Image (spheres, rainbow, N blue to C red):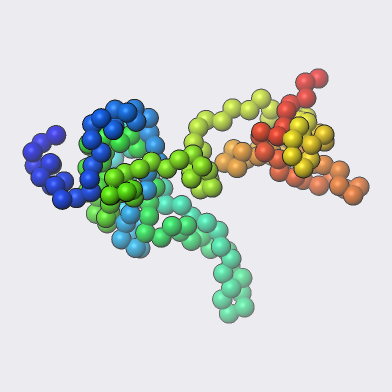
Length: 197
């Protein structure tokens, strides 16, 4: 790294040292970046452009502004709108090293990484799951149309044909007989097994 870059970083966030980065390995993690309020989408666009210009696509994998669907009522009219889940924050999936730290930290609109003493701390799988972000490539041994048996949970000892699969929520939707009617229910991948014929 050039002396000029090191001078630029002096007084900014405390960057992770080489030993910490080696300990973390070269696996990408999700980090939370604090931005000026209202600049989330601009930071995302600027960062994506910098990634492209510097050819860092293999080190900074994804930049995301998590959104949620909300129903707004204005003048008696209901309207579905998308709102930022965390105003003032952007999520970045990246390999943490000197170059990626510098690029993210010096993107216009970024005020720093979230972590103790401004040290970047990756999100855990438990923190990522509710955001609808897949933490790993999920592999299941059934598909739409396959018959599965429920082996745990409320619907234990029932069976049904898979109607829909949602990898983000890690659920399969099957129809069960409820009060004489076919009713779709979502069941966790962990609670079902494929029925081999």
